[in-house]
Amino acid sequence: MFEDIEELSAGRLSHPEQALVVAHYQLAAPLLEANFSHVPLVSSYHPQGLGTPPVFKQRWKPGELPASMAAVDVVSHGEHHTYMALTENAVLWLAHRGAVGMMSWTPSPRDPECVAYARILFQLSGTAKKEDLTYALLAMRTLLHESRLEAIPMMDGHQGAALFVPFADIPLYDAMRAWLHSLCNRAAELHPDLLTVAAHDADRGNRVHLSVTKDAVGGFSSLPYSVAGNPELGMATPVEWNELGDIENGTYTAHNSAERLQRDVFAELAAAIGVQRFSSLRG
Image (cartoon, rainbow, N blue to C red; front, side, top):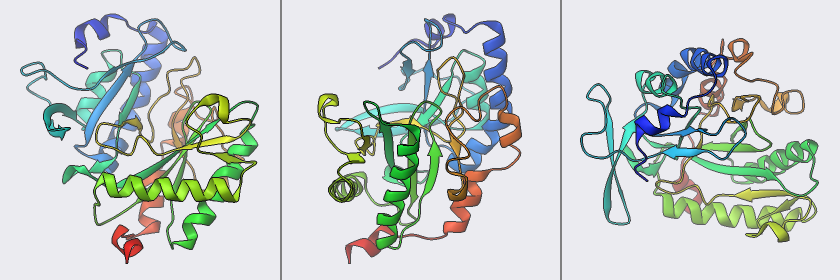
């Protein structure tokens, strides 16, 4: 868990790749801070090259975090851990040291153990196609609407997607995750040929897998505007619902992200949704 930052930095990308990532975050870092200021920040590295399994920098040892960086103290399973706080400066500092992805568990900035955005992760299984990803997102939106909830869709930069469901009353992760499990189980029952919640790959068939296990303290996934560690350097791209099918994974990458980053689509969609409360779902 306490990977050495200098060792991770030594496994740098090629100079052109590094330049692309840094240039991307010069534009994306202010948006990341605007939406997720001071949440615990996890960064990913690919010391063996893009397209290879990542290594993550999560927790920081006492004295290891640079003095210029803010820290977030998190309690998990009765133990205290220190994370770097997400700021524009922190994102750029990490990017200059070889980091590719920027991740967290989208907690409230007021309390890293409470939810600001619930996340549902979507992943293609078997021979499921990108069109199935669109249908899966729309199916889940319909189900959320039954609870008078709206969500922000995001293409994850790989082959999957995510829904971010904002809540203003910062519920605890355990209660949120239990509700999400029930929601996804119902979705899979309603759409058995499209969706699955099966735990094992062999049982998922050619469907879209729904996962909420990352909705936990320390359970990180890509934040909006993060870069994926694939050769294309795909950007995790928030999209408007009417853009689904037009904007896909690979549409925006570190090569052309400047075009998309002229707007903070995530912030616009969150503002349009307004106040949603988890307490209203529980009577």
